[in-house]
Image 1 (cartoon, chains in turn red, brown):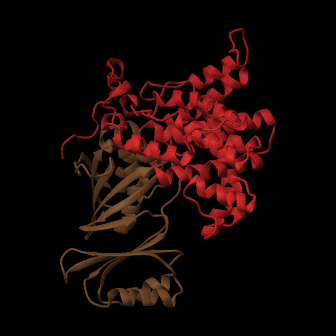
Image 2: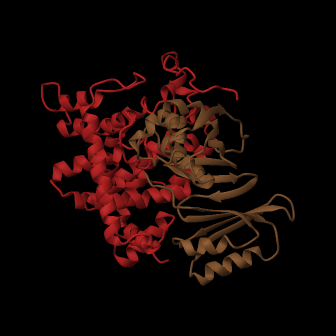
Image 3: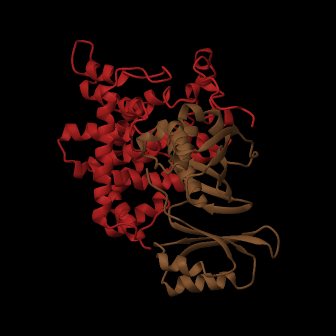
Amino acid sequence: MNYQFRTTQELLVLTQQHDWSVSELTLKGEVELGNASREELLAKMLDYYSRMKTSVANGLKITERSQSGLSGGDSKRLYKHSEGGTQISALGAIFERSIAYGLAVLETNAAFGLIVATPTAGSAGITPACLLTWQEVHGASDEVVSRSLFTAAGIGKIIGYGACFSGAQGGCQAEIGSACCMAAAALCELDGGTPEQVVQASAIALQNTLGLICDPIGGYVEAPCMMRNGLYTIHAFGAAAMALSGIRSMVPFDEVVGALREIGQKMPRIYKETSEGGLAATPTGLRFKPKPRISPVP
Amino acid sequence: MVGPSSSHTAGACRIGWAARELLGGTPDHAQIGLHGSFFATGQGHGTDQAVVAGLLGFPPDDTRLKDSFQFATSSGLDFEIHEVDLGAEAHPNSVQIHLKRKDTEITIRAASIGGGSIRLEQIDRFAVEICGTLETLVFWHADAPGFLARITAVLACAELNVASIRTSRYERGEQALTVIEIDSTVPPEVITLFQHARAIQRLVRLPVLPGF
């Protein structure tokens, strides 16, 4: 095996050695594992991207509240707002639309619709929202955009090796943090960033989500998950822009992953997807606690 | 995958799916014990429905997942779900499942470790570590000398590469469990050959778990 990596240090040696992008190295590494050919992998990513776009489109159609009553109709609301009127934000329609796309995927998810976990379901909105926004602005093909999912996958893999993705193990920082880090990496490469800049974008995105707790109201992947998927889309764009401008993270990516792991390990259990603390334990949050459908004692 | 959570829904479904394969078909009866976060927030995430969907053989991107309880009734799967405490060391998203199908019974313990990835940690009394990313052979066999040598000799003749191998036993000379992960698909004739070996009490070929 010649193209495998577990840290960005290893990744950067390989990309430099072969003069490859992060996506190319990740793709080569997957081909090397021997489970699928290059063509099959490219086709698979293209299919994932098309499923992502469908999950955005489906979410934007939702007008009803979810079963829990915690979400529903917000992506459509924001999308409509982005289309006109006088109240549009100073940052413009694209800004609002990209947030709406992030919300849309989580609305599809809350309705038990089909989504692509990137890297998890609770954080599945950020990457599709970023990539679809980028595609609309640049008029690029699905082939071009879906290639950047390999960039996201390569960076995500490193987080998987060094820390974790699950809110129950690492808090929201492991989910939303990983997702916007992966999206920032993809955006950075799409915008012509070097592998070094891609790694910087990832480091900037990840270190500024550290500490986020996982406190879903009522145990549903809706609040605050949904809004985070919208808002952290902007975070990913910001991190990519900073890296492209030449800004460097003080702490290297691999060490940020180490910090993510450490914070996750030390984070109290009540903030790790148990809905026993944070927003879930507020008076309002407690109102949404489901009545037990399954018996507490055998 | 079908939401809402990769670990609580997709991972839970894949665990159920693996348990069904290890049993050899849809169970008649299932006792599902949810530990930690799986119990605490499982209801909002549809963890219970997802495990049942997996037990019925539904993959994680099957939109029937949310209606799995109804499908269980029509498939004759009788199930109970309760809370279990598997100890402080257990992964927060852990589940223990006891299944029964005719004369076959099996107990598995597994964890959903994030992003839909899972780890089977125990089969019956035996400690295992199965991720389901490779085809896996699970042998229930007598703890007797030369067992592994015979098995690996057959695999070698069939040009099958072993990725990992693990044997665990409860007491010396009693029953043992061997788990072998293979890099490729095991042809049916190899399985037939294994069935001639007297030491093997039961053999299951666990396919690569469905993706999401």
